[in-house]
Length: 200
Image (tube, rainbow, N blue to C red; front, side):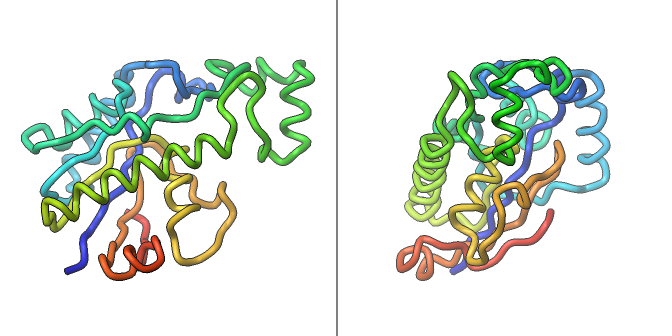
């Protein structure tokens, strides 16, 4: 039996609105973000599910509380956002005069974050968190689940497990939006790949 997974990016924080790199900075949702999220909920954007997996950051926990407050859930620490190091809690404009940032941009934004988490380590961590959740899904025999996580985490999961190849940044989604995934247990066990995906 196929399992349906919804990857949902948390609602906006003040840092998101200001265009900051927000990774390990544990910001709550801002009023604008809550208002936008409530509009999505009222419009029926988020499907009913059996279970919820969530990042430990409060912006994700607060988003879960508003969408799926009555459902059982599990916090998966490995699904937290990347540590942006020197870029953390800074805007593009604030960083333009830093040579580390210029070098990172010159590399197409693909390199490691100075004094932050290495991209390879981040990708591995996200994969471990997603695999942990899939194991729970299979053990419980769940039909559907939602992951309330971060933009970078969503990108890392799809970059690793989508059948089609794509650039990491092609998977980017806005706050409150995400993807619908179809997990075929047989395909997952054989190849560690997802059967299909579509925008939520």
